Image 1 (cartoon, rainbow, N blue to C red):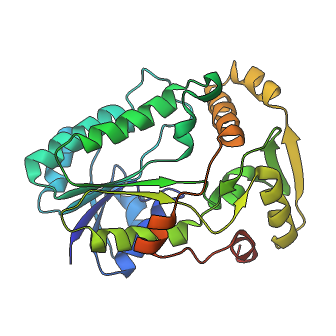
Image 2 (spheres, helix red, strand yellow; image 1 turned 90 degrees about the vertical axis):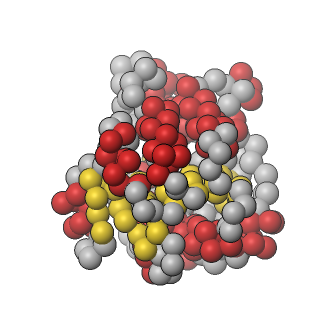
Amino acid sequence: MQKVLFIGASGMLGKPVAAALIHAGFDVTLLSRDTHKMQQLFPGVKVVRGDLFEIETLLKAFAGQDIVYLNLSVEQSSKEKAPQPEREGLANVITAANETGIQRIGYLSSLVKNYQGMDGFNWWCFEIKQEAGAAIKSSGIPYTIFYPSTFMECLDKQMLKGNKLMMVKGSKAKMWFIAAEDYGKQVVKAFQLAGSNNQEYMIQGREGYNWKEASKIFTANYKKPVKTMTVPLRLLKFLGVFSQKIFYGARICEAMNKYPEKFESEKTWKDLGKPLITLADYTKKL
C-alpha cells in the first residue's frame, strides 16, 4: 500500500481524513512540530517532527514517501506579510517533494475562495488559496486537489458557543454541507484511483442550505437546547479593526453568506461515491 505523509492531521478536518486513510490501509506518517501531542491523538501511528518553514525537516520526512497530503490554512490572527503555510510553506513542500521523488501531492482547497473578485470582494487569504492551487498544478508533480463546500463540523466546533449558535446576518446563498467523515472516504477513493493522473474534485454533500436553514436543522436535532444568535456583519467588521482574528471571521462569513455556490459534484459522486451523512444525521450523533 502507498505511503502517505500527512501534514495538518491535528485539526478539525485533519483528524477524520487521517483516520480514514489509516483505516483503509495506507501507510500513514504524520508530520508535526509537536510530536508528543500528535502521538497522543494517534496512538500507534508513526509521527515525525517537521516544520513547513524548515525545509531540512521536510526533506528528511519526505524521503521514502509516495504521497504528501496537505491540510493547511491561514492562522486567523496572522497578517498577510507573515510567513504563511500555503505560501512560503507550500513553496518548501514543492521543493522538497521534487527533490525526494514524491509521486503525488494531495491538497485541501475550498469552493468559497472562488468568491474572490465577485461583488468587489478582495481578500488576501483567498488570493493565497488560489495561488497555492496554481503552484501545485505547475509543480510538475501529479496532484489531487479537493474543493469542498462548507463542512458540517463548522457548526458545532466553531459556531456553537455554550448554548448559543453564533451566526452573521445576511445569509443568502446555499452551501452543500459535507461531513468530514464522508470527505475522508472520498480522499481514500481518490488516492486509490489516481494512478499517474491529475485529479480535481468538487466536494459537496447531499443537501444545500443557507446558514439560517442549516441552523434550524441543527437546533432541532442537537441533544441540548440551543438558541441561534445573529450578529450584523457591519458590527463584526467594526470590531475587526481592533482584532485580526475578528476581521478574519468577518471576511470569511461575508464570503460564505454571499458566494453563489452551485452543485458541481456529479463527477465526484460518480468516481468517489455519494456522501451518506445528512446534516440532521450529523447533528444527532454529537
